[in-house]
Image (cartoon, rainbow over all chains, first blue to last red; front, side):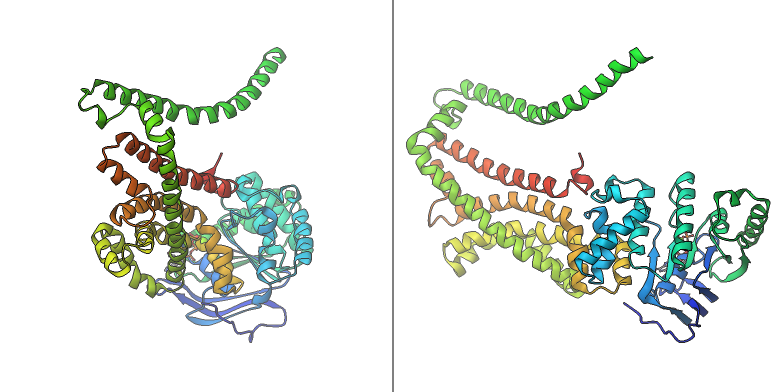
Length: 255
Length: 280
Ligand SMILES: Nc1ncnc2c1ncn2[C@@H]1O[C@H](COP(=O)(O)OP(=O)(O)OP(=O)(O)O)[C@@H](O)[C@H]1O
Ligand SMILES: [Mg+2]
């Protein structure tokens, strides 16, 4: 099932807009209700919320994999990047062929594809591993391959579903920093689902807090730190204060 | 510390190399030992038989010399061996082609799977010898009928395993392909088919062994045409040629083992770079 999404209501600069979106799964589970959200290019919005509140569902709606049961989702699907919680690599393909997969699916000629793959692998620091199979990579490296695969399409809107959730703290922070420099470099619109408040505040221009199921947006926090953000931002008093506010809002939803 | 370290390092390097060599040795050694053990038991039983009953189980070297290596033995049994090998192989290839097509259609159309899968299972449950007479009526005592027995016996594991492999694609990968609006054929060739390879090869391996059984059963039932191992088995039993009977039995097993080993090797070869089953 592939749904073509309406592009009306997509404001001049909105890369993604939800208006009055609700989704009830066929089995009757009401996952989302009355969701209003818009993300512009140059914005990086993180979404935090209680487990099972519909965060992944929200990204599926944004990507068009699932159609809303009410409301309108507007997005430009042609340049959409989507990084899942698992790296979702094809285990039988070498790293370079995994990175080239999307270009291949979009029938980009081979020579052009190879050049783009090489460039992207260099960008994420995996050029030395291009001939390896995914089985031989660490979790962090697999996630980098997954990221590289999406980057080859040069997305204008980039969705992330807890991409670093399964990684250890240090690898996670490294990848956070790398993701930030990509964001600054490419200027896409980012929507990032995470369980980590620190990660959310560190990366984002805005943090959105969702309620328990059926999920809706209950609080939004603008994050004032200018980019580029060095790792030391995480140790400032202001950072701790904002993280505290987000945490408090989130606790209100869980209680 | 430094003194301790260098022998340790040397020690680290040697076992790695040694275990590689002995790894292969170790995998051949146990079956080889067991083989010698079986020969010894065989020999002992054969020796313990009273002279009047000794023909029932001739000694291993007697089977080797009179049953296999004697000129008039091998000149008769080798062509039969080739014959049976070709029959198994032919039926097996037909089973692969049709089995894969059936599974692919089931994968494409769920209603077809729902409609046809019960019959596939039933087909496997029917004792083939029960329908052999019917086939004799339809096709006569022909190679066609023998081949059909092979196909019937070897068929089921191919569509069953292939379908399992096609269906076991990770849901996230399906989402990824859907996200990029790929057609069914692209999904089939770039996702489902490679994903099914481990299961498909398992199907091949099981089916290859069954094909040999099918060929011998078919030859035993339809005792007509160029004689294969199955016909020889019955013939030697009839003629009380027990040396040759055991020789034919050994060749039949070798055929099955050969098929099985080939597909084990192929599977390892194709999957070792990416699949857990072939790790190491
Ligand atoms: N295909 C589906 N059919 C029915 N219910 C579903 C389906 N997918 C998800 N759900 C339910 O919808 C709700 C929201 O699911 P979703 O995966 O979006 O939550 P989430 O916020 O991403 O959870 P988590 O924090 O665990 O990742 C959950 O209660 C889930 O069980
Ligand atoms: Mg989720």
